Each structure stands twice: as structure tokens, then as C-alpha cells.
Image 1 (cartoon, one colour):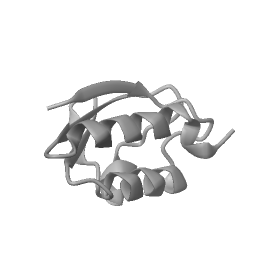
Image 2 (cartoon, one colour):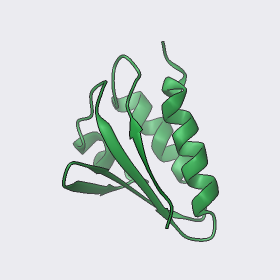
Image 3 (tube, rainbow, N blue to C red):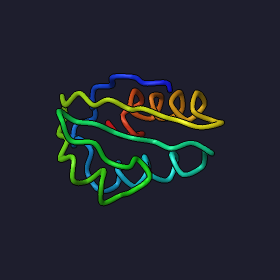
Image 4 (cartoon, rainbow, N blue to C red):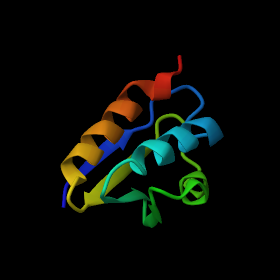
Length: 88
């Protein structure tokens, strides 16, 4: 099960639009996606779960994937985060 620590680097953090992009991208893959901040883990395909993380700029999150497309999903989500969700 692939896992990667990522830092939220876009100016507004993991706000509604960024969360929607994350969920939309995660949902394209045949993989379970989990996102963890501190000891709180949520379903990465749930916009409410992602928003509940309350992750401002500078927050470090763990993204973990499981399933047939786990590697592809993790790579795509890492790129989305690294590219600041198309912001800034």
C-alpha cells in the first residue's frame, strides 16, 4: 500500500475548491484513498472528510492508497498537491 507525506503549499490551504479537485481526481482511480493529518484519517474520496482535516498552508498530510490503481492514484494526487492545485 503506497503512502506519501505531502505538504500543503498553496496559499489558501486545503479549502473547498482544492478539496473538490482532490476528491474529483481521487475518484477517477480504482483505488481506496486515505488522507491523514496528525491522528485523524479520512476517506480521500469524501469532500466532507477532506474539509474536516482543516489543513492550511504548511500542513503535512499522509496520503495512502490501496487497490489496483494505487500507485497511479498516489502519483496523480502528489502532483496535484505539489502543483498547488493550480493556484498561486
